[in-house]
Image 1 (cartoon, rainbow, N blue to C red):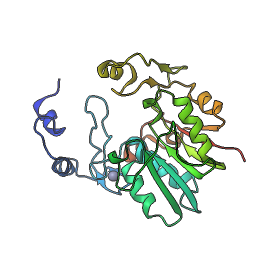
Image 2: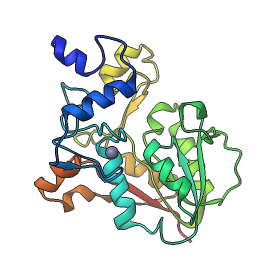
Image 3: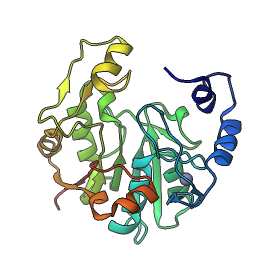
Image 4: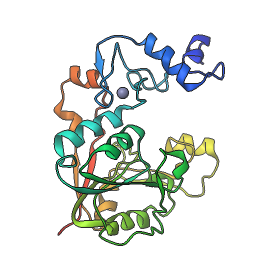
Length: 255
Ligand SMILES: [Zn+2]
């Protein structure tokens, strides 16, 4: 059970507008022990996103989570996405990355989703099961935390492969249990509470296991599982609010 104070911190007790809640949390977490790579804000720690599970998680300035901050730094450190002209498909475009990609002169940016109105203005409609986009269009595709919602995920992944240019690359993250060899999928579970219990979120239809790599390879990709946060010390992991053991699935399409 949450205490009244915890509920208040999460904005559960009253219908507090998000901007007010964030302003309150910025005051509450003021300090200089952690640094958000996305918005360069510092805090004494990141706020808990859901306080029973995830301390040091949520930037109360740009609203990044662990995975957003790691991806932000990975793109800067390990890829050429900001260094040469690229045509970029960004599915389910994360806010902080949308704002950056949209203003980078080298990026021909194509943000898209099947529910575009949930995202920043300018996001286009795209159904990964029936994309209205020619094959071999994009140099880079980012599609994170999308496939677990889609019944025929293998078809969606094949379409991502088709839309990528030969020689192109992508990052395709999913909710994955690294202790499980096999993906657990059950399309007959439709009750939101049961889905949350079994798959982690109330509208997911599967929880991926380590065989996710095989699924990507079956679609044609070459896959590199890059445990980026393993390159950081524990102090740095805390400072940037990363999650250990959430490697990037970096895919390429052979020339
Ligand atoms: Zn931030």
